[in-house]
Length: 303
Image 1: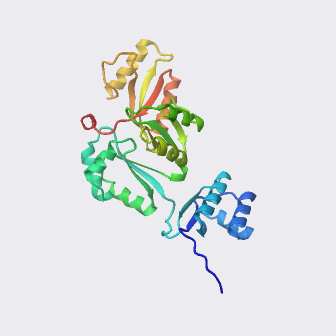
Image 2: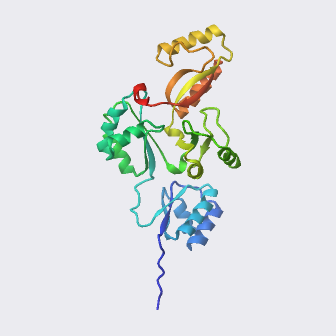
Image 3: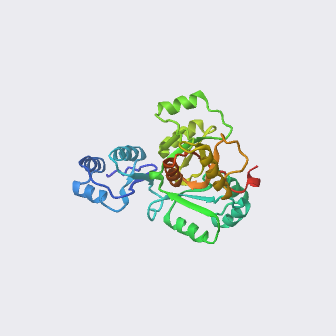
């Protein structure tokens, strides 16, 4: 009599992108999946798709960790779910500078099947409305539905490629335990955008926020909108700096009447990559700058 063993909560192991097939990866698949080297090479060389199905979660997690160490991008998903058409992405919807948030929330409510109030609260946070793990069809539907909405910024990133920065929550007390834990993980503050740690993966973000979420939040770099401030004159004379800041104020960047020693805003609403580039450009002309997370929407809505 044949005994059929049932695996509780089976998962499948998904390859997210074609990968070179180092001998160790081939050997791992052969040993763990009981397949031939030719079969392992074929699965590793596919555009993207399942490496194996019907696995125990513990065994699949161990195999995924070993493959990740070898440089392969993989993901686990429940075996009873329909296979996603293409890789899943995290999507961010947020307002451009000066866009009325309440009106934008109303425009998005039907499309996202969420209430105006919930969306308004999300739009006031860094990163805006974040829709995690969207299949390609949902991403296309959201993009089609938002084409006529003015002042909406959309960004997407593959969760397994995401790089997160960890920021202090406004008014939060940064305990010694938090700072020691970040140091223990080898994480240091980032002078560029005042992040407590920069460029961490999703697993590290979740680990830190699970323990210190009342004081820290994570935000993917592609979802950041940053304002750039002059923090030092560098090689410019006082007169040259004053003339430069006057031109920026005439373009609506930063209020007039600030003391000369206070950081003064010169760019607003930049992406993380653009803010980095602007910082390098300003550095070449002798201006020292720093970036800070932008405050979305109109000033009256954020009081």
